[in-house]
Length: 297
Image (cartoon, rainbow, N blue to C red; front, side, top):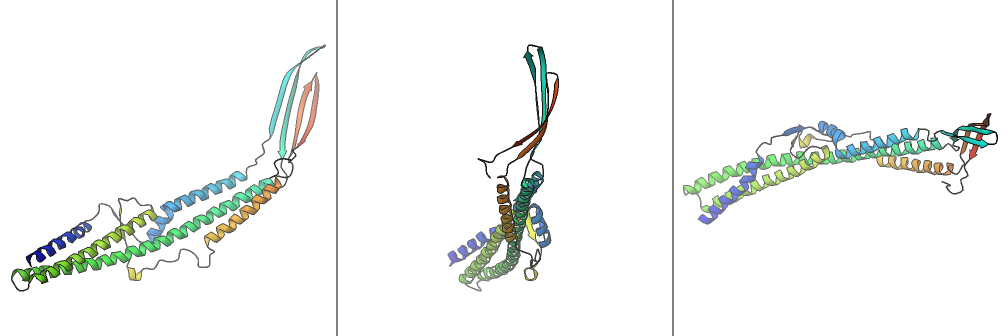
């Protein structure tokens, strides 16, 4: 009987160690409400940061597409002329500007704008997923916070029952079995506290990943489980971001097809050329046309 009592006491002490450690305050603890969690997620969530960066890159492509792609070309040549009448210097200067037909610059802008809209819709889709995961994790934290509170209360009650049973066993009022049962009940209550602590730590880790918070910072969520309800983050009748993204990709594909067709048209180059040969001044108008035989878009 003494072995049973000692075993129960040792088991109770073993499960009490994590409870005592779990109650030690962390060096850095921040209080987070649902509103502040949503703000943090939108501002510094790694997924949101990447999605915004991709959207900014796509928007920069729109600005690049608006730039006129065909630059004017300046040509020049100079050299001596040898002949029977002596030596003279010939000079030639020219300026050319390609002219693109088929609305190619506007089509480039259409493609870039459609891709930018696709990336913006992707960012909205990422935000919807992140905030949905945030609501689940936040609810889980509130749940295990309440479970831990109840588990701690049960542990304290079991600890008091074990103390009374052990004292009664010492004075001979009850047998050793009652004291061992009380010790096992205390150990079971301690394991429930440890289980709630482990679930809290896991949920806090997932919340830190969503909010972009460092691992050395502890999180304490505000709110009560029975009164918590994650509010909607957008209009109920708003189109789903992934559908908007697919529609934008469809527009980008159609614009890319039009751009490819436009490359089948020839490119006209117009210019002017000035030449000086044998003391004579010559001004020429220059026209050239590319023939799309090989590169047909």
